[in-house]
Image (cartoon, one colour):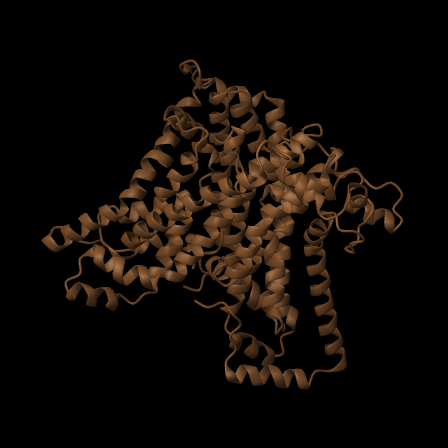
Length: 313
Length: 299
């Protein structure tokens, strides 16, 4: 079903023999078909990764040759208060918006799945924001919605709220508006949940009903366990995705990460360091820190999945 | 493969009989659920509708009218927005379209080739390459962006579309390779074996048997590539710095910078224009989109 279960099953594949003439021909054809991908792997992915690791150990401003500084960039990160703050902002963003987003996605998928007429229409309505949400245009809209006299505050004043918050201009609420934006795009995981729910055989529910299990119990005992691989899949991918969020924070804060660095995502700080200050060494070190963090959380997710993800194979 | 609601005939009658015998309390609950779903849906879509309506309003009205009713029709926002930057806005839309076109061609050609090799051919290193391919789906772009920038700037490609298109020609959007592999696996092997018996080489088999049969996956790839490239900002922000090379995303951002918070009408008008192509593609292709993310698990 998913890329993740592919990784799980990789270790089970068999071995083939590549000595016969026909097989050699097949192998040659295979590498020919893979040529663009292999070139991409070397030139666009793996090569640049290694170069990035090297640059992260240098001072480099694009104009002069890189100057080897060893692990200075990495140790410098430990004393960089703005960097620590940007990590905090990113963690809050990821670990608040992703659970809410997935809960909304799961809740609506279940509500829509259970004998709902007009399913495909509602599915489209909820799905659309996830296609638009990453764009500059939607970030522009958010700037207005959560401006001091934007639509949200017009609404709040209309219902009699005296001093509505300044949202994007207030350090204590600005990040919340970006979290809201990410939650707003729950449609994509919702569609994945819907497809997963469709695969649960109805006979399980019928049998449970016959045994007198309540709907809540059926949800806990049937729906959640059988859906857990898909919850896991969505969780892993949305976390990876959220760690890399950039556009919304950039546009809503006008590129500054403000007010008071309250929307300074790690990626935004990385961009400012690399492409604003041209500290390519430091930016590369930050990128590797990001990769390590994302990798670590993915690994933790995989390790923890043994305790709650249910595979019936 | 299909994700539409499929109920078998006995299930249909079961659902119908359940509906008939529902108690008033259950009916009320059902109605309530419908109302919540509809209400929440309206809440989700309202900002979008409001932006479209506001793009036709005067500046003061935008900040005074939370409703959707239009009193007057202010089309001048579109004129002002269209001409508000150094080039007419069509220039940036065309740039975005060219980038998207290049990326679509690149993804269709390179990803389908790689997918065919992974799904159908045996070769040494397949397992490890396949694992690497899956891992690159999850790789943050930031780890490679600095060296890529250096490489492309040494090639003199800054302020061209090549840094955005060439990676797609080299199948770096592994998500689509995976999507196509999944699809090819669903095509019966007997078909390519028959073609082989008829004397087709691997390339003929790919071209005349597999490619025509994987059209749905190709359509899904086209649609997703279009939407993601059209919405992309990070890459375009880095590589397109000369105003005549701006994509619609970057142009919109420079419009925000140029006007601050003083020209919401024109800003909304151009925002609506940049969202429109995505919306139209969504309307036409949503079946493929939903199928695509349901079979591969989305982005």
